[in-house]
Length: 471
Image 1 (spheres, rainbow, N blue to C red):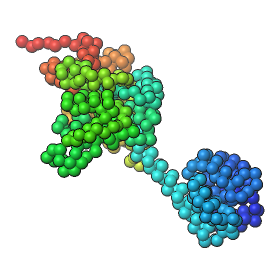
Image 2 (cartoon, rainbow, N blue to C red):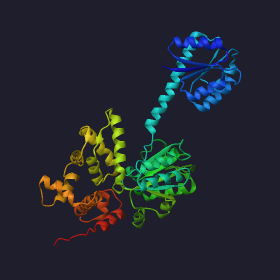
Image 3 (cartoon, rainbow, N blue to C red):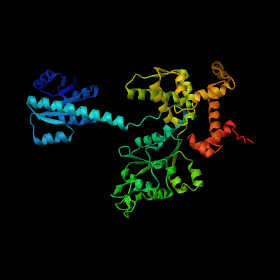
Image 4 (cartoon, helix red, strand yellow):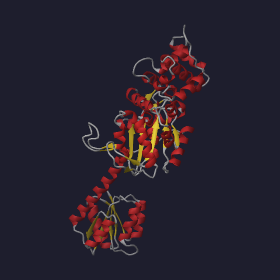
């Protein structure tokens, strides 16, 4: 039932309006002055207000202005016994939905109220839908590294500083970029994303800077590039380490001069864009190999935010998993499932080569294929649906050694003093297996398991892994 408020200093008008509206099954309250009316608006969620213009204590126009500051989406219908076109126009300019004269015509009154309520509902629904479509997911976790990232975002976002976001695939680099934009002074302007790895090198310049008609064979019409589309907002260059050297040179010029030229065009176009970049590559190594410009690296790397691998913050996995459980179950319209303690420990023990993205897919798979409570056995069964030995079984077999019985496999967990020892063992065996599979090609292995090469070297040193050459 819609809740309405009548503000009018004439008792007869208030009583008449109330009687009519209550007969139409509206919940109605009334007050005789604007000051008390504003207090009621503050305390109560009304769906619509009917307000007289000429009143004692506070003029109706002033009530309208102050109410717009309190609740800008609340529909106001202004009422006046001295209605003129000028008054109606003024009320509309100040935010009123409509204007009716005293004494109000019954049919016009009811139609106006109904339309005002419909408009209010549409505004609310539109905002909800926009939030659902564009809402930036929260950065989940309470680990030290995640807390540091959140703190850095708070400090850096309101500035114009360029940010280079590094981290493995699936770790959440795009999410960091979205929050940098969301909390910036450019939040009301567009965030334009470009995945440099997904665009062929011969098309990347056209994608970024646009092209003129006829500039190349397939350029049948003029195209506006991402730099122009992001004007006034933020441009996010994802996987910038895969950008061609020629495109890098043009991006460098755009950052230096705030000007671009379309492919095939001579006109210089000024652009006001904040650039954020992300990569899963070691750009310093790419510079050494001649694949990335050092001057562009220094232009982009004003602030560096490194997003850690999920295996480096396993204490965050329960929080992230619970969030995924709730959101995915909500999307599927089903009750939220639970993961028991042993199931959660099994999740934390997985190598997570696909990072947070893999965890999301894993939780979705578990929701679909498991019962109400997700167990350790479920995690082991569905950890590697693509075939082969799943990580839980593989790790358990390695732990058990020569003992192949199920009881021996279970009791072998006693050989570890704590969970971290078990996790280190699983991680060591996984990395050793991948290195041997790739004939100890560190670069290839790092790419395959989605971590930076420098990080893989650190792991090799940590676990004391060495290549054993067979005769």
